[in-house]
Amino acid sequence: MLDPKNVFWDSCIFIRYLTQSPTEFLYDIGEFITDSKNGRRKIYYSTIVYAEVKPSHLKQRGYGAIEDFVKDFEGAFEPIDRECPNFCV
Image (cartoon, rainbow, N blue to C red):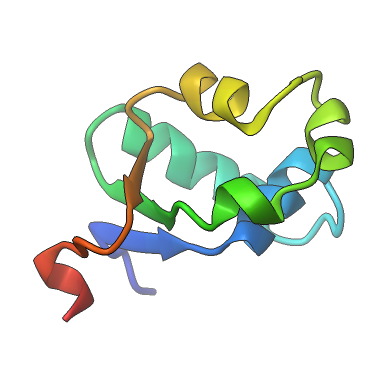
């Protein structure tokens, strides 16, 4: 099984985590987040996620805004924008 140090998450993974649906891979997503919080890997995401994650997704986990969600997991997620890190190339 692959165990990448750097991963890129699309909004669909955040939405799955927030809504807990579908249930496949939720445990794995949680493990990736834990690993990232503990410095064992980096989870990168596009700032486009801010537009794609709906307030209804956030409310299911008690968040009022996407910024609140990201802040709650401070250090686990690393945003990227036009200045993509070297691993994107």
